[in-house]
Image (cartoon, rainbow, N blue to C red; front, top):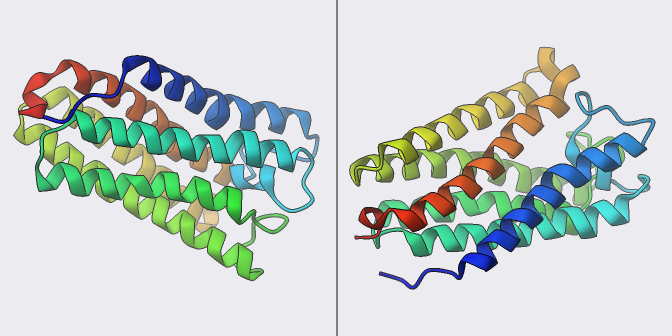
Length: 209
């Protein structure tokens, strides 16, 4: 069994994720009169020439990426040494990569589907986030089920459903008017799932055997 991460590190990472990943974008969005929580992507808060973009990129996207990376590593250290858990954790790491991409490659104004080279890289990291996140959640759900952790398996499936619904909502043209709400459903559900699961796996020794 791998040595667990100190609990206070996990607590700090969880608080940072909630603050930078949920509270900060909602706060900055509230400050911008030209921004709609339901109609605009989260990435638009850090877009080129956007108000408060520097704050969102450095205190938001970068911190979210670091917090996610630490929590996913913590989750892996809590789990059994098997291929399913390993592959699942690698896949969900795509979410951390996407937020690092949002920081390093801010989207063009309006976050269009086609734009500059920077926008193309930004879009690519988004694809990595949702396909990696959804695939990883399914793998982890399977691993939890096989180890007898039914509650954690159900939570992973619930997070997968939220991410699938959110991703689908962002893609379907008829649902584009609510793309910001759909993205928040996908991303915020993943954040909450990860925090709950990291703390729960610390308590369940059978998952690490």
